[in-house]
Amino acid sequence: AQSVTQLGSHVSVSEGALVLLRCNYSSSVPPYLFWYVQYPNQGLQLLLKYTSAATLVKGINDFEAEFKKSETSFHLTKPSAHMSDAAEYFCAVTRSGGSYIPTFGRGTSLIVHP
Amino acid sequence: DTGVSQNPRHKITKRGQNVTFRCDPISEHNRLYWYRQTLGQGPEFLTYFQNEAQLEKSRLLSDRFSAERPKGSFSTLEIQRTEQGDSAMYLCASSYIGGQATDTQYFGPGTRLTVL
Image (spheres, each protein chain N blue to C red):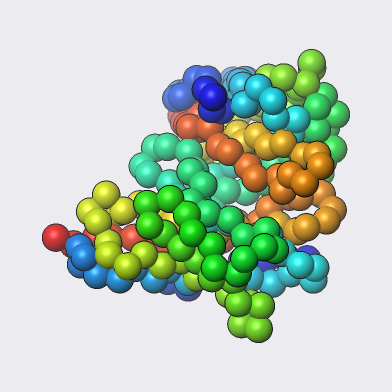
């Protein structure tokens, strides 16, 4: 079985501040991990993915995430928030073998204040 | 690369009517997934295809839901006898499986269904 927990349904930051969105996973086999962003009334856009190569993964728009096996975490960070980063962010886990059906977290809404 | 497309983008229907949604995946992708997303939740897996074969359908929400991918290209999701609880965003995603590919899913814009 696999699951994803995103801590905090809402995260509020000031423009220019560090963004930290938390994701913890559980998986009985080595996981693949993803972060997606969703803007209102749109589909999900892939930000970055971890697929057992480098543990620090860089994505689009200066986002990055670090896979920490000991902590079963895959937190998303960005050094400096921009107003356009305001959106819903989803963490997802799937497996390196098997049926590849991903499990998504409930999402974290990022609010950016001017 | 034209991305994943879904039609219609919005559908309003009356309770009891049937609705059908279409998804056109990225052309070289052999897997296609359907999800439902309700307000404040992440995508909930419904079913998926590899080429024309439907490999998992036990998570379709009820026997009113069905999906097809007749030629391994586009797919349709049908909901019969719609209920107000079916109101949601229906998302389609596609991916490529093979070789070293890691099944990264690319999503379409979704179809928002409102059942009155």
